Amino acid sequence: MFSKHKPMKLFRYVSLAFLVASISACAGSETSSDSSSSSSSGTDANLSGKITIDGSSTVLPIAEAMAEEFQAANSDVKITVGKSGTGGGFKKFCAGETEISNASRPIKQKEIDLCAENNIEYIEVPVAYDALSVVVNKDNDWAQCMTIDELKTAWEKAAQGKISKWNQVNSEYPDAPLTLYGPGTDSGTFDYFNEAITGEEGSRGDFATSEDDNTIVRGVAGDKNAMGYFGYSYYEENKDSLKAVQIDGGDGCITPSDATVLDGTYSPLARPLFIYLSKAAMDRPEMKSFAEFYLDPKNKELVAEVGYFPMPDDIYGKALARAQEGKTGTAFPGGKTVGVKLSDVL
Image (cartoon, rainbow, N blue to C red; front, side, top):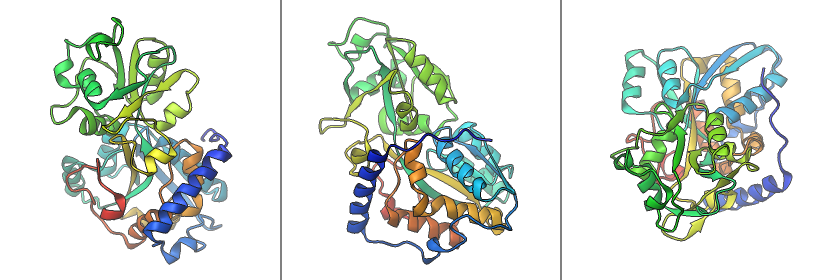
């Protein structure tokens, strides 16, 4: 059903594991006693049924990897994973069409209201960290590092129809066309980028959009003058044809990486990624077992394999406890995650 996820780079995961262990040691461990149980291992010969997942294309690689590994141990459980974008996923989830909704941002009030109208209760859990990556073509030799103000100049609503060349973003850049590729308005990545970069006025609308991040990859890879943005995994898969722009959030140029995401210096584009679980569906053994498998710290290497950043074990423990207790609602009532620490809200 799914293509096998790529082999993990051992040196990357060992380095990341060391960082995560250090952070967890400082923060203290709070993993649930159930996390080491047989149910959280995801293996149960008696499990059967169907689980439907949809939503964020950013979270998609994680969901596919988790589904593939879980199904390998539970062949009678069928899991399908779609990618209609965070907004599109919530529409289906709040209509009762899916059991899990992938999201690269917290649920919005209008989506909360839609779920309430349809009597859909949800459990919100983080599953990984991402470094939202601004990328340019591999032949771009000028935009090595960009400030938040420069990104805002290029992408803000006021730029529409006015900012069309690179030297309008920075006078030291060439007098060359500026072509932009980005996620569509149903994307949580689009929402997060606006929250972090363009502000309340939002984004310009005159750029090429797609809910499929691979379309953005192809657009930027095929145009020397292009710039785009998406989740780190899609940059990691396409390093040969793209460059990640370093981000200067006020403290110098920072490259997206394991270290800069976990220590908070890749700001403001480091963010948590989520899944939303149907509380009603959690009464089903296969759904409960899959959720426990997904949030078991023992399986966090799957997150690293597909190019994202595992959370510290204590955060997985809190997320797992939230799912097992059936704690409904959002920990982000304003829908904002920029500058918010998961350890403070879970």
